[in-house]
Image 1 (tube, helix red, strand yellow):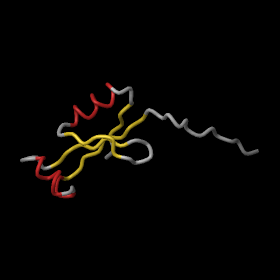
Image 2 (cartoon, rainbow, N blue to C red):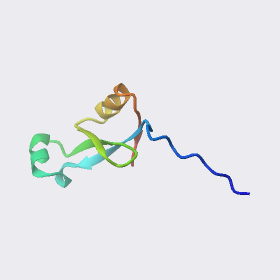
Image 3 (cartoon, helix red, strand yellow):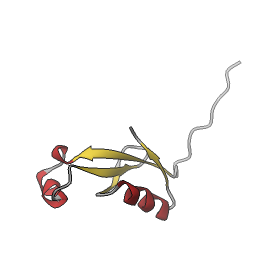
Image 4 (cartoon, rainbow, N blue to C red):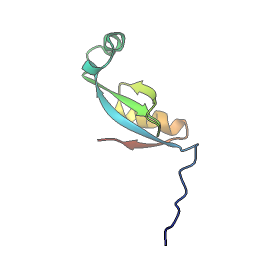
Length: 74
């Protein structure tokens, strides 16, 4: 017997926080990053970037303030 699993709802509230090397970003973003070596990107479950911030804690707070459940990506 094969069970059918329900797919995740479209309004999935999980976001993913990952470290991004500044050297991999476009020049206009690198210019704004100043002395930082890396930033933190917040992505939705489809992989679309929602935010790019300088601090990991800020990325998690930003997600929670917008009713998302942040998960770290290693």
